[in-house]
Amino acid sequence: MRSPKPASGVLYLHGFNSGSASPKAALMRAACERLSLPCATPQLSHRPEQALAEAEACLDELGRAPMVVGSSMGGFLATLIAERHDLPAALINPAVAPARLVVSWVGEAFVNPYSGERFRVEEAHRRALEALTPERVRPRRYLLLLGTADETLDARDAWAFYRGAASILHPAGDHGFSALADYLPAILAHGGHALPSGTVATQC
Image (tube, rainbow, N blue to C red):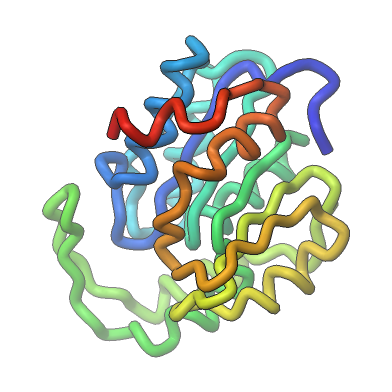
C-alpha cells in the first residue's frame, strides 16, 4: 500500500543490539538527504516496550504521514507502528515471532557496539515481545525485502505472515542484508519518492 501522497519523512528502526550509527541507518539517512526528506534513526532501547515508545516519539517530527523502515527486530517494531498509525512500511528481514527468537538469549549478556550499553536479556523481555506480537497485519501496506540465505531468521516465516505484501527476494542475501544500497530506490519508491539508482552507495 503506497500512500496517496508521498511519505512526509522516513523513520528507520535498527535491529536488536544495533544502533542509529549502523551502516544501514547511515545509508537511509544519506538517501533521505539526497531527496531533502526528513529522516529519523533513533537509538532504541533493548527493552521492547521502551523501544516502541522511543520510535513513536519520533513520528511528530516527520510530518503528517511518514514511512517506517525497519530491519530485523526493527522490522517488528516498524510493523507495530505501521498498524497503529496506518502508515506504509518497508521491512528488511523482519522478525515475525521475536519472542521465539530470543528464547535462546534469555540470561545472556550483551554489549551494544554502537551505544556501549551493557544489558542482559531476561524472561520479561520475551514476555513483552510475546504480548506485543500481532496476530495479523494488513499486508498491502508493506514492502518486504528478504534475504534467501538469512542465517538468523527463516525468510519463509515472513513470506507467510505478510502474504500479499509487495516482496523482493535477494538471492543468497544474509541477515544483515549487505546489499541494501541496491534496494534503496525500491524502498523510497514504496513511499512515493524517486531515488536514482546508484546515487547513495558511494556516499557511505
